[in-house]
Amino acid sequence: MTYTILTLTIIGIVLLFWLNNLIKNCFSRSFCILKNRKRKSIETKEASIISVKTIKKGKKPLLELLVLFENFSGSHIHRKIRVWDSKPHLQRFEQDKSIPIGLNIARKPKDPIFLSQEVCRFSFVFVLICLLKILVYVVGSYILISVALEKIFSSPEKYEFVLRTSQTWQIGLILIGVSVLLYLLLQRIGVLVNGKTNEQNWNLLYYGVGTTANIIDYKNTEPFIKNDKTIQFSYAFKTSLGKRFEGFDKKIIDGADVDSLLESDLLDIMYLPNNPEVSRIKENLESQDFIHFLNRLFMIVVFIFSVVFVFSFYKTVF
Figure 1 (cartoon, one colour):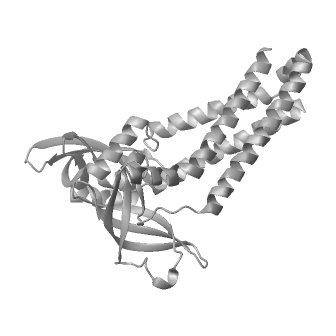
Figure 2: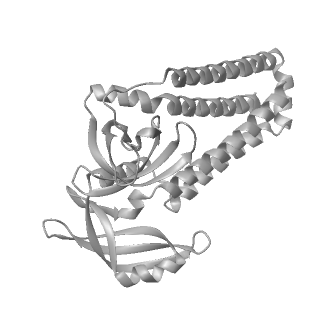
Figure 3: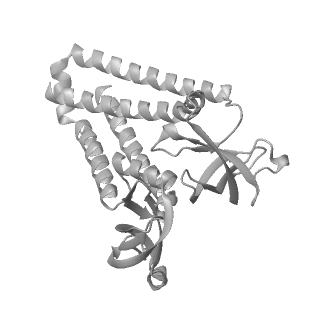
């Protein structure tokens, strides 16, 4: 029963992984806002709109706003927020205008920003669609596993031989191996971070103090993508109390911009006021587009492998 147990374990891990993602993406953000409004862990701030980008046109267009606002230490930071403009005729979301935003501290270390409203409203249709998707997924998974178990336990020796000679369990192990390898690789080059580092970055961005640092040294690395280079900087800065600290951080730079950056000899950084030894380049904290792209790419790769594995399991057992 070795290969049977191995295959069923992998199929269980895959189905639970995607169920967790489905529930989290459907409900966590909206219900988190409602719950934490009651707990008074929502901070409201005024943000200035720097630029507006239309993601999806229509009667209620989807907009991506680049906003500027003060963090909890009074330093100005840039963040992006996406909103559905339900009343475009009011022209609420235009460059140089101000909008109220909310910072949901309880979402730490996830992105806490959302468009603040006096009343936290929910779309009944959205909740209904989410419930329907989860119901269909759970029922489909239950039918798949229950029927498969019935077939396997009706003739365990036969299916042990079938699963041992099939490629299903091998595809499952490749799925897990490739996922872990990609995760470790992206973490190694600094694109994906672990939970502790992610929380530290969150604290730096929302509680950190911004200042200018002098470049002490830098180390060139091999090109990362096309002409881009990953450069590790060593820098020194002074806190608001005049104490000197040193830090280091990596930055992905276009090859053509490397010389101009090094000539300036300066970097915009942020440090924690209660622990100045913790600091990072400000642009690394604000720029999340590339990281989000790689996260999506990672999930797409895992999804494709998952579909192939589940289909192989279905073909083998049924």
